Image (tube, rainbow, N blue to C red; front, side):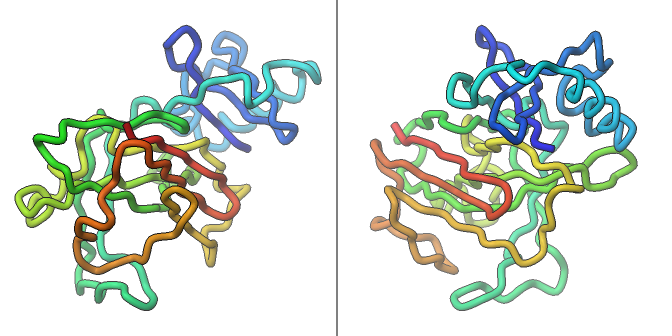
Length: 235
């Protein structure tokens, strides 16, 4: 099942994205589920209840995907924890003996198709990173997966030993376009990709330098096989 947050008159509302790409807002009264976090907290019982409700909806319920505005897949995350230096392959940094755990501010989330801007007087050295987001649900179990663009400022004063500062400006955590529940996605051996204006930048172990700074007019797309594509425009 694909679960999304859509914006209705500027306010977030949880919805299901059906296989035919029609987006059906979740009826809170009928399901007892008020938002994505409520579904995740309810575990399989909540998903079963949501599935039964969805099966009873008319074929033409909701709207086509291209007619809605997507917000952050989770509009109000309780916390965002990240694991650094966790990639294998050519050019990747050696993995530390202990996992490198840091975070991003919950207020930094943004949705698919959002426009990102920031104060260039604070930092003009910002780049993008594709990450597989793991959404935790009831009893600490994995509820689902999503795409995350881990936008990061690379200035030494922000990225040296204070990673959270350089990763938590407003809009620096695009999340989406939706969550794919754990029963519908296998995270093993999936392709992840990040493109800027249609080109794939080389992943470096060090800050990317002036040739890789994000600039106004850039379009960043992160994609994960089996989930989808998350696009951000830089202003």
